[in-house]
Image 1 (tube, rainbow, N blue to C red):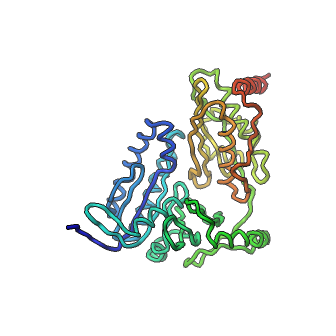
Image 2: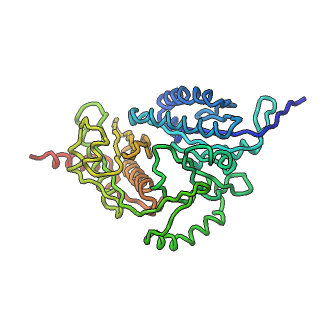
Image 3: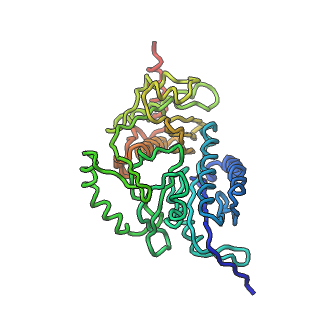
Length: 392
């Protein structure tokens, strides 16, 4: 006879951002990071009376008797990962997403079922890398009991959930809620855009007009707080990528990649990028990125490393917000030389979308235009430019 235990609980889903892709590119690194991820997160569950129901490989399904403790646990986890990443090598930076919901769950024959579990699993992918999203049910339990900014993202359509649900973003202590620009979060399922999304699109011109006159504010539900939406010039410095290849003869490649990214970003209206001369003044510098950013007058810094091996290369890139110290985005690219322009284009697009959401760039619109498809010719070009830059 089946034993069944039904109860109301706060459910948490966690997931490592980009883990599947990383495990395909570098299995050894992915397993090492997975082990470290477990060492960080598992003790925190115990601190907040969370019960891990199961491990999903690169994430967890956990249960809490209290929604408040679930939120506090989620914040503690993101804080621990954030603190760890600040001193980690760019190759070893990882981020997690967390989703929370309060609902009915059923413990049956060693497994956990119910809508509460399904909904929590659909909320988690809506969170930003390094972020937390919660359902309205969680919000109702905690909004006047925790000292956190909880921003209403509006109704979201979740896969296999018939009714759109109100979702909230939890702003972490190092995040600037006043700089937040409300946006529609698309559900990760191939469905037609829900009605609220279509209405939002129709209202965009009106919102733009109101924002221009400083009259548009985004309300934080239940908190009686507003954050003014401002169109500000975004600034990012591209620091010289470190050359991790054996020997110094390949330094031209890492310097060339840095210069290509500077050129690509500098062509975009609305983003200011220090020139090559300014950026390369900090090559091999021991200065703290915060100090460099202050001297260059920028809000964010892109740094990374390059390793080449024959016709293969690896680029590790990390984009950081200087004021908060928060890692906005990080990625590792393992590709062939023939794909170098695609990687440059992807990095540039990601920076644009991360720093300035008002610059609308279609996914199929190239920013970096390939000057040649011949990888040998491209490397000769980079060598020539490197020699020109080193001339006396």
